[in-house]
Amino acid sequence: FFGTKVRAFERRFAEMYGRKHCIACSSGTAAVHLAVSALELPIGSEVITSAITDMGTLTGILYQGLIPVFADVDPETLNMDPESVQARITERTRAIVVVHHSGLAADMDSFREMARQYEIPVIEDCAQAYCCEYKGRLAGTMTEMGSFSLNHFKHINCGSGGMVLTDDDGLRYLVSLYLDKCYQREERIRNPFFLAPNYQMTELQGAVALAQLESVQAIVGRRNALGGRLRKHLLLIPGVAPQKVPDGCRHTYFLFLFRLNLEELRCTAQDFSDALNAEGVPNQANLITGGRPVYLYDLFQKRSAFPGSDYPFRGRNYARGDCPAAEAAFDQWITMDVFENYRELDVDEIALGIAKVARHFAR
Image (tube, rainbow, N blue to C red):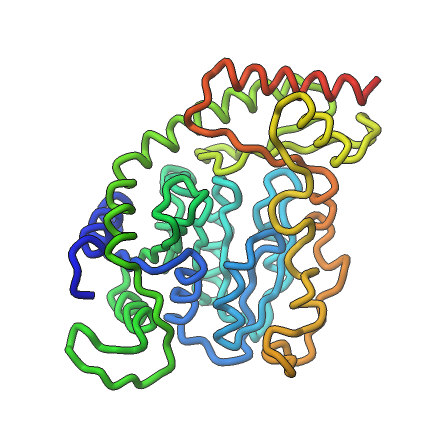
């Protein structure tokens, strides 16, 4: 609290995004937890989020005694499907956490309309989505709060870290209390009146993060150009389809994803992945979340968030088949990196490798 580097980083990041407040913290997981905590939702409230995300999206929801409800994904973008969210809203729904998957913004017009219709807040999880855009607006600026991650493999990083962005003075103050044991540092009062963790970012992290901000625009610009080039190549290859980029969206390619037509290729995603790796193109099948939608993790299947208790699930079951598009995606999609230091030639050769493997299996 008494340092200078973290404060400078917060000011600079808020300025970059045109937001009033940035609160830096120790991780992206912490950032989501802080944002959820600041909503001060009653225990047992339902929070809708995506079936394809990282556990970091869910940790804070569970620690606050809230019940995650998982929505299915759009089979062409892998972002949360607004129709699935709409179908899951109940009288116990108190918030929506929208995940901008792989650097592609979700359908924010739909989610903002739901927020207005049902009078529920929306948090944007932008851990994978630095500087990605939706109809001219940056992901993380379209709702009450946006959360970000600075861990070691994000667009920019400081080893580990995170941020919450908001324009709301009240939310900013609550986040600052949840960040630091409910110590009222600004008033110099040390008398906590609710339970809060210690999620402060260190000065060393802040110094590195501040320096990283000078590179973020160049990094995402380069990835957008290379990812767009590779996407155009894949549109010409039978049997594969790159992730759909809706009109008005700027993809920043935290990951590059493409879907296999398994009937046409007559192989499994793992077969395709193994062959592509043999061609010298690093990739993986089954996406990035443990080979399954998160609700199929043991934690949710056994309702074992806390030892010896089924709290906070209150009898809720998470069943295979709940989100068919998300479950199918793990058998159909290939995940790759497109790094900013690649050359155009590298991207072209990657496309040739994909085309060679696709032709092989199609024959």
